Length: 226
Ligand code: BV8
Image 1 (cartoon, rainbow, N blue to C red):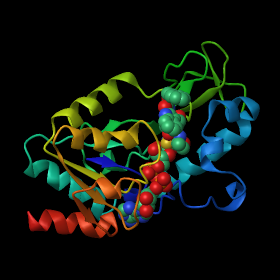
Image 2 (tube, rainbow, N blue to C red; image 1 turned 120 degrees about the horizontal axis):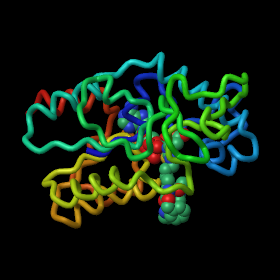
Image 3 (cartoon, rainbow, N blue to C red; image 1 turned 30 degrees about the vertical axis):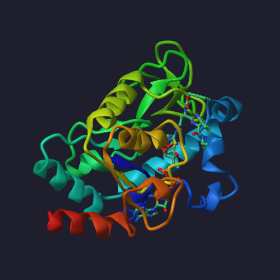
Image 4 (cartoon, rainbow, N blue to C red; image 1 turned 180 degrees about the vertical axis):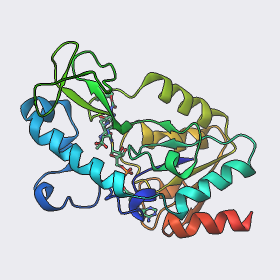
């Protein structure tokens, strides 16, 4: 299974396609989610992530997330790969989720690249906060545009799509690489490709089946039909 922002839309988490609202309306997500934007204006990008963290903290998993928990119990070899940084799959009860683009709850030292946890922040009132070890800014533990994905996560995802019989691409616009290439990789290895999305995407012409509707409605139906 590969999921994108669309599976969290019914939980109230805006997708990347959705225009940003309020303070952030004048920015494109792809512009803010870059190391360049952070270096240029650390406070702006940090505040954007604080805002998004509040949104994801308030969000609750929806029937689409829970249906994938159920599906995992019904099939022998199940792998869940997500582009989402909201942690909602794990909160729904999914185990061993491959988070290709990191997790918005985590903090990382901008210079050292190592996790920064409680007691590891410099107590100087800096915003963004600073790493107690080296004094560099702390950044959210997500993969920004132009940055490589975590090697182990990508290797595990590629191994899964290289050996699966069925791949579901759920709630993704299939525009961001290398994630968007994974369902096609699976198809090239002989897997059946099913897309779940209320809107067509560049992947739609390649899909064997398209379940055109909201994931929160389609996925529970799929599980019931099993
Ligand atoms: C990299 C974390 C090495 C941060 C994210 C090849 C060709 C062209 C460009 C590239 C390429 N290779 C690399 C690039 C550059 C770039 C890229 O792909 N750019 C795109 C914009 C063209 N990729 C990278 O930079 C990657 N790194 O490749 O490193 C490298 C570097 C440079 C050059 C070469 C190689 C890193 C990409 C990861 C970036 N980080 N997130 C954060 O969240 O703040 S990406 C982020 O955006 C999300 O994680 C997600 O991946 C993406 C958004 O896509 P979706 O999840 O699909 O969401 P979207 O809003 O787009 O669509 C929602 C869909 O849901 C829609 O289709 C809608 O119809 C549907 N929907 C709506 N409601 C529902 C629904 N579906 C179901 N149910 C509903 N209810």
